[in-house]
Length: 67
Image: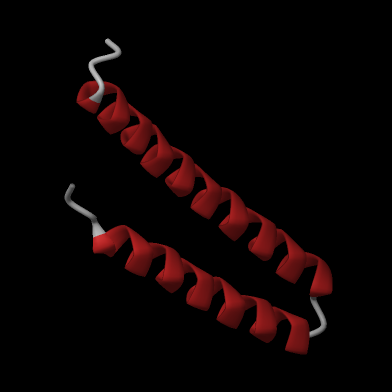
């Protein structure tokens, strides 16, 4: 099975960028905007993970011929 490592790097990159933005906004005193940025980043990563899980389940279905 081919493992797509680029998805892991994308998720890690999004996490690093969101963490930096969160820190900058918090230092500026905009805690509410920092929380929103973190929440939006979490939702984006969640959709990416859901898409990857969907691909995994489709692959499992084709392997075991459950179609």
